[in-house]
Structures are given as structure tokens and as C-alpha cells.
Image 1 (cartoon, rainbow, N blue to C red):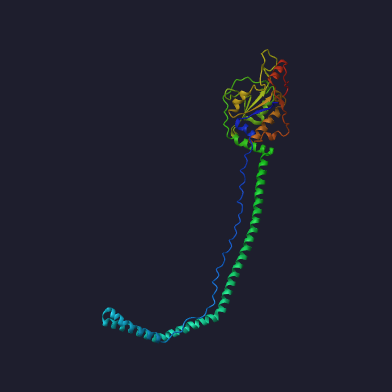
Image 2: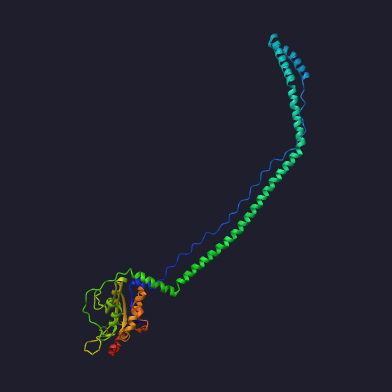
Amino acid sequence: MSTYPVVKRPQRIEAIFREFPSEPAPPTFPAKPSLLLKPEPQQPAIPAKPQRPGEFKQPVPQKIPVKALAIAEGSSAIISPIVGALANSPSVGLQFFVALTLAVGLFGFQQYFNYPKRLQNYREAQKKHQQQVKNFPKTLQQWQNEKQQILSSHQANLRRLQQENERLKQQHQQQLKNWEQDKERLEREYQHQLKELKNPLTVEQWRKEEVKQRLKSLNPQYLGYQSEARRGYTEFPNNCSFSSKLTQYWGNKIHILRYMGSYTPDFAYVDEANCLFIDVEIDEPYTPRQYPNCNEDLKLTHYIGDDDYRDSQFTQSDWIVIHFSENQVCRYPDRCCKFIAQLIFDLTGDNSALSKMSRINNLEFEPQWTEADATRMAQQRSRVSCNCK
């Protein structure tokens, strides 16, 4: 059921009360730690195993191969005549014989003179072979020692590498654990933020702050010249103290009988510094008011839906509209002023008027009347009696 007071706000302000704080962006999780193990060293290169020296088979050099020389010379003596006969020239055979003889002689001469060198080379080779045979056990032992040293060094490097990789694995496990904890913590904090944003108190506080920000973006239409609109009974200071108290609390921010477009607010609160313009209306169920009685026809007014178009003209012009019932204003003018002061504080944070009203009770809500209710009250001439100042 609709109740008094009724508050209508510009769409940019009214929308805030259907909105919620924006959700924060999901957390950015740190990169998952990766495990980088050091590669195992390649198998070491082992020198070739030394081979045991075989039997020394080099022949002993001869001083002069006399037998061979004799055979060669004899052969030349036999072949030369054959060559001469074939050539049909004894001189050719003789030349061939001389050439072979010189060749055999040169060969024999060479063998004679290089014999000492050939003998020396033979003995050195024989000695070297004997030394190799003698040193082979030592050479084999040296190779085995070198092989063992290389393998031992490789095994030591492999053990150090395995230890280092094991350390890296343990470190990686701890890093994974820390990463999981950080991820869970960020997720918990994010979920807590989401939950907190849905907290009614948080939403209410956000809306209050958002209202203050959006209020600055309003561009309310200013008041026009003085109008000659008819005033309701409770609008006159002699009948009700409400108008006097408005002026008491807000001074020259209260305007009476000034146009806003084609309408005249009962009372207008204008705070240009905060872009806050409020149309304060006092609703009665029918007019004219029968105090004193008059013979004019009664007109139903201010029932639910009757003021929708008029109010929309104000809210579309970035005004706020407050409707009090005649009964509320007449009986509880201070409480109505406190309601306005609370609204101003909620919108702007200005508590200059509200701070003076700590002893004033809050205004109680009253049901808004329907057209049928207004008809019944008009027929019964039912109105609140106003003996209040």
C-alpha cells in the first residue's frame, strides 16, 4: 500500500535504488610455478684401450745380397744377346747388357753404403718394440686409472646433479603449495568482496555515495516568476506553522508561489550549490477545504495516480517531489521538516538542519487515499481539524 510521505526522484537518481555496486574484476592469479630440472650429463668419452704389442717380425737387414746380384748379372748376360738378336743389332744387345750391369752395380753399391743406416733403424725398431712390450702393463694400468677417474668424476657429477634436481623438486613442491595458498586466498578475498557488495548496509552506503555523485550531474530547471496560484489551507502561516518552520530551518532556500514550467510548487527548496531542487507538496483529498464551509462544488484531488503526470514534469526537470498529507503537515510540522532534513542529508551530506532536530520524533507513515477514499471523505466532509501552529 502506498503511504505518505511520497518521494519521487529524477530517473538518474531513482535508478540508483535499483542498482548495486559494480563487481570487482576477478583476481589475477600468479603464474603457476614450473619445474625446470637440470639435464643429466652425457656419457664421458673413454680413451681407446691400449693393445698388447705383437711379435716383432721385421727381417734383419742384409749387408750385400750377393746371390741376388749374381743372379741378376747372369740374367742380364742371357737376355742381352736375345735382345740384340731381336733388334738384329749386336750393339743394341751390348747396350742393354751394359745398362743392366750398371743398374745391378748401382743397386749393389747402394746396398753396401746404406747398410749401417738400415741396421740402425732395425735395431731402434726392435728396441722400441721391446720397450713397448716392457711398458705395456704400466700403459694398461694408466689407461685403467684414467678410465676409473673419468667414470668416478662422471658419477660424482651425476650424484650432484641428482641432489640438485631433488632440491629443485622439493622447492617446486613448496612453490606449488604457496601458489595454491595464494590462489585460494585471492579467491576467498574476491568471494568476500562479492558477498560484502551484497550486504544491505554496503549497498545502502554505496547508494548514498552514488546519489551524492549523480546529484552533481543534474541540471534542474530553475524557478520562474511569481504565480497567482490558489493556496491550500495549510499553506498559510495563520492556519499551520509548517511554512514558518520551513523558513526557520532553511531561510532563503524556501520559495513560495514560483513557477516551475507551467506548475507552481506548494513550497520549493532550492539549493543551487548542490543541484538539489525539491517540490514540497501538501495533499488534501478534495477542494475547496470546508473550513469555513462554502457552497463551491467539491473536487476530488491527490488520490493515488492523480498527480503522476504533474510529478513526472518535475522529475524530468531534475526535481525531487515530496508529498505530505494534510494531516501530517497540520499535526506534525516539525516531523515533516525532519523528514525533509533527513532526505537532504542522505542526498548531499548536509546535516546543518538535521542536527537541530535530535529531539524531534520521526514522522509516522499514513496510507495514501484512493479515488474511492477521496469520494467517501468528500461526501462525509471528513478532514483533519487543524488547530495547530
